[in-house]
Image 1 (cartoon, rainbow, N blue to C red):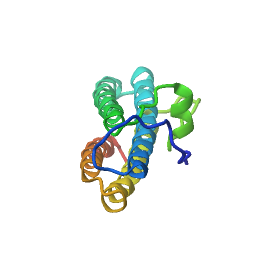
Image 2: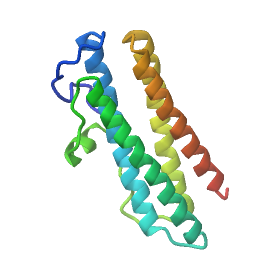
Image 3: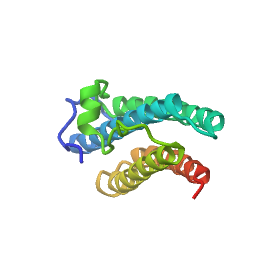
Length: 168
């Protein structure tokens, strides 16, 4: 599990939230950004290295998913800035703060790749679902909860698409 320490000092943002609330939101967003980056990288890796009878369709499918993750990463980073934080941007920081594990070094088959990505999306879904409640109830930041809900919806859809590709 990632550290829960402040990822960076806050910049002045007079947006009606306490400093503690802003720190909590920025920390959540930077952990989420780290997860998005790790999942993006893994999805791109699988896009490059998929092989088997479904190569063509999975190559295109993984590309669609990493493009969506790329957009999500940008939105998450911009939200961290909107709450007065600094978005993480170094590989070392992403690896330190992510909830996810890198892809195995051993080449995986098509279904193993899909299952690995699905597992990661489900980890992100669980993390975001927990943080939506925290943002809304504890931090009194409905705007952060709404943004996290949109991220949750995107991951739910990507997870469903992955599940639909499984042959089992």
